[in-house]
Image (cartoon, rainbow, N blue to C red; front, side, top):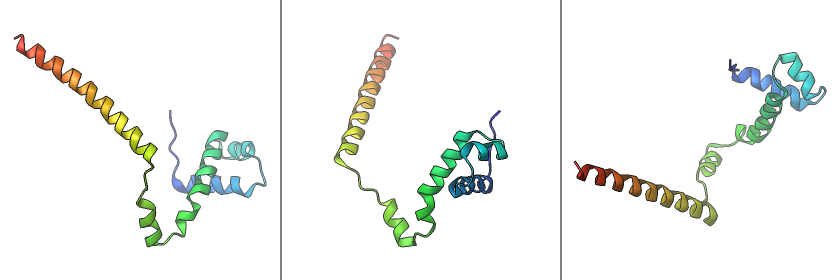
Length: 100
């Protein structure tokens, strides 16, 4: 069975891990969770901290992603593969109907 933890619990655990006066294993034992969760929550908290103090203007700028040429080429390749697959499936579907 999978446990769902609320954001307050996660933040308490992550802050305890950031303080660093105890090991990850000690914190995990205290809160009765897996040490990997402690590490993941700590990492996520550290990544998201700048967003807490971001202004509305900064948040809007962050949402306007700039895609690299490599990202776009990967996307084009993926879409081409999907189109080829669908063309083949649709073609075989139409051929099957003509036989009826």
